[in-house]
Length: 381
Ligand SMILES: Nc1ncnc2c1ncn2[C@@H]1O[C@H](COP(=O)(O)OS(=O)(=O)O)[C@@H](OP(=O)(O)O)[C@H]1O
Image (cartoon, rainbow, N blue to C red; front, side, top):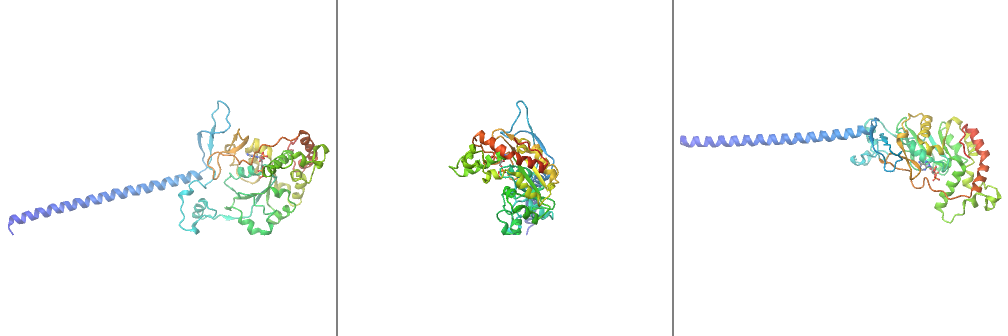
């Protein structure tokens, strides 16, 4: 090969070598940039998820000026609404994926997965606290308000173990309780417990140290509320006045004490049965009337009684003037302001004032006995 040809091929090789090196450098640079972006994106996503989670479990409240659409507000005053993180569950449920069934949290809430990762294992325990009554006293409101507390876990619906399903056994009952951690209060509410003869002894057998909550309300209003509920389920029901008195009229003056809505209101009689099994200091009486006008004050008493820190305060409530009742700023599963359902806070029918007066006279001695037993004057008319 001539020297000229050799020079030429050497120049071509040099050029292709330079192109190859250039290409390699570009590929390396591009792949480095791509990986860097990918890593920093992953890192950012992780940090966002982490701070979302921490903001849920950190008790420091965020303060901002706003109020629910229908919140009660004094004219000219701007309300400062403080949202306090109440629970861990429900908020980013959709962000959690479970690869198999066994990995699923005990009651379907993602918080349990986090707890398990921390070595904490919630288990189902027997309730240590019961809301035993009274029917139409405000038991749902009490349960929904107290379960705002992060250390309270409650069965959502009435279990009726001690009055209807006792034959199913204690393990059946325990299975109806929500999973709880050590130190959390397990609770259920079944208002018919207060008036069912066998219940005090059965509860005592399960745990003689059970704490008992009783929401009481003026027995006359309670009876009317009870009747209103029954009438809403059974169209064509006879009038309240006909059912509450013997001979079908308040003119007779004789109260029909066998009629359920009347009988339940004789609180002293029912309480005497409970006091045969439990000491008075195991019972807390909540005023149904005060639970409406000052829910925070009543819930403070309940938290003290249960040995809980006062976490649920007036900041958790607002007064809904349309409904005429206190409602919640938020709760587990309801991140926005909401009230109890339509069946709570119904309009009552007009009742003949003579019948109301007669019922008041009937209840007066029983109320006096109830005040004496509890040491509280509820001030019912
Ligand atoms: N915040 C709030 N919102 C709505 N309702 C409230 C509230 N607080 C107490 N109440 C009163 O609760 C009454 C219903 O009582 P209960 O929940 O014990 O009823 S039940 O026995 O479970 O059926 C219900 O009775 P009625 O007014 O007759 O419907 C209410 O007066």
